[in-house]
Image (cartoon, rainbow, N blue to C red; front, side, top):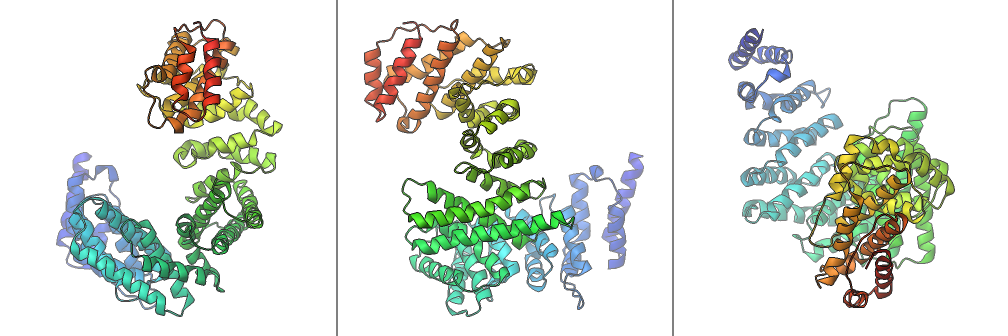
Length: 600
């Protein structure tokens, strides 16, 4: 069978090479789809690509269809490229097609074709060759130089920015021809922005320039360009825009709210409020379709606007809680009301459990960021955390930044505490010990430290019976570091909590000696102080160090059989530590508590 398979494959490839016309080539391509993908080796793939050839693909891409710009031939060409040319190293071949691919984007309103072109160009931008990247960037800029950006072309601006950053960050990679072309392109768009009277054109150009300039702000330092862009952005934002133009312009908001500090606050607040309103409208539209069992789809531009609105709202939350917050009280209240309004829509959307949307992680992230600062109806919060368990497991890196603060902030509610005790605490413990315990345990340690301070001990008997859990705990307990680090300090907090949970249910773990680990941990906490080798970032980690010391003290006081012996002069210890810190009183208290818990 294998011999017959390869004989047929060889016949198809030879047929492709020798086909006399396009119809024959189409027929062989159709036969090719019937072969098992696993049988196509890299050598066979290369033979297939050589047999298809550049000329045939170009002819398909540039084929015209007067009744439908989004023609069948273009779709076939893009399908062939996706299927065969993106799985092998064909940077040079694809570069030849860039002009044709960009013509398709300019000529069509079909988002499916446009998205395919973007995927292909994105793949090409992942090439590591300086010459290939320079050629690709030059071709992209060359296609834009003829006039103002179009909405379809706007999708490629992010790719242009990414390629440019790679070339700039690798010394000597960016050639003079490409550099000059980039400068010409930006100057051309700045002039277009000054002279254009159409709001739709302004919105597209502003967003394109914003992505380019702010994504590369360490490279582009022409203050006049930034001034023109900023002025045009805030002026246009206050105009009466169509829904489509407004969504395009709001994509710029995250950049301005994160980077513009000198501008008038009322203009920045407008960014926040319009983004909150737009997010609410987009989410409610999707929710309405779900309620009516309609086909739920979201265009590229709506998705881009939705993600941008979430980023802007995060910037707004950072502004509210910042120590240097300068917003007037009435402005802060208005901003909080706007964000709370759109968060209610987000909760409603989450209840439908449509987590397969690729934009959902962004929405859930901003929701958790909001929970870190505010409280909703506790039943809604519990439901949302319950619904998103699987999501957290699959997209851990997206959410881990705000999950601890979101959970801790809700624990003022007795109902939420019960939820933690009966269900969610065990889930978070399992999440901490899953795959990378030294990373996950570190991130979620503040949650377990909060439970410890509240004297809430989870029943982890089922989890502790699992071999993988025991292995993870032992891995954490064996971790070592010669310096005080944030990671090691939080691992100590995490293991103290697990140890106390084990102690309360009289559970021992084979391979884990609590007493020897406590000895090592106390020595780890005190050694840098005794040897006058506090880390340079001591000021940054001293609060975590205090929390770790307090955790160890609770463990030593609770588990009477766990004793640590040390020969330490307390006055000398306090003096050495206090001389290196502003938090003298807190550190002194922590040290005295620790020294009272160990056997001197």
